[in-house]
Amino acid sequence: MKSTKRIIITTVICAGIAALAYYAWMFSFYQFETNDFSTSIEKIMSFDYLATLVPLFIIAGLAAAGIIHVVILRRALAKTDKKHSHFADVRTGRQKGAAPKQRPVLFMILRWIAMIAFSFIMIWGGLIFGMKMSSLSIPVLSCPWNTEQMTESSCYYLSHLNELFELPWQSILVFLASTIGFIILLGRAICGFLCPIGLIQDIMDKIRRKTKTEGIKMNEKMYGAAAPVRWFMVLVFTGLCFAGGNFCNFCPAVAVSPILAGMSTSLYVSGFLMILVLMGGFFKRRAFCMVCPLGTIMGFFHKISLFRIKKDTQSCTECGACYEACPMGIKMIYTEREKVNVTSANCIMCGECIRCCPEDKALFMTCAGIKLYTSSRKTIMSGYKPDKTGRYER
Image 1: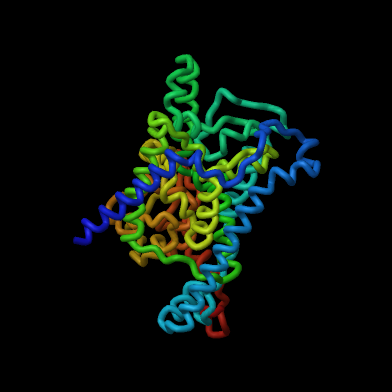
Image 2: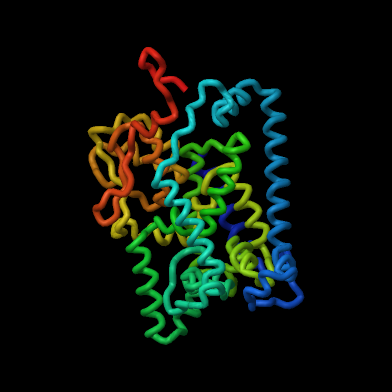
């Protein structure tokens, strides 16, 4: 009975996504009278630039209002439900027994620098540096409507296969070679290090933690329920064009990259979905990544990617800290007791599992066999200080 109910719910959700995708052009969120796809340094430095940012301000404001509304409702529930209130305190770190803050990890610092720098280059790079590599494609959700980016994003042709097949065969080969090449070289490390939408979601998660707001606690059933939606999104992403639809009309990236680059871009369902991405990223880290079609496609190649998450099964104590820290809910990373390579198709290489692992060298990340980041007990204990008796306290 439960499985039948799950199938019905999944079918309804998928049917809703399909209808939303097909009729996205009918639901305009914000519409300019004339689309302006040209920009310049002078334009960005002028007051006209603020006019192009209006949709983004509206999206941010509505997302903030939605988040505040949800927080108020949850706090009202906590006042009437003592058990709920207790768990809220534990998760947000308000209790005295909460774990102390660790010292900054070099790997995480470099990851944030890479995300910020790459997002900056993908949005304003072509405009500032004056160079384009339009023959190359990088599989990152940097909106193809942004004509000022340094490189094309492969998401457009992957979601418009009918147009890809109309290109000269030389162009098709260059597209496939550059796209597959980057996927093999980086795998889903692209999601963890380079994706602008990933950066936005991580920023929302940071805001939640700074405000000590309770997030959404996911369980295996919830992660399992997201799987059919993820695969259906891949089907919509790659096949919608053959049904006469346009994936760009409800892709949330349209509401970010071109607008920030100074382009007057009309938004349709994409504007509404960007609000959900911001709200989802606030309450659940990397919520959109769980159903992102481009990320799922990159995950197909995880076995030949140069990046790996590996595990010393002898050092692992099966504490489950890695699973609790993983934003993608990958359980095999701590249940695996035989294989060294525990890289999953859903792994975005964010390194959170390694950062939270309390055992020396139990988990580590490699690139082409070279260790980049290793779990460390010393790092875990860096938030504690020994007292006079030698015991560690906060």
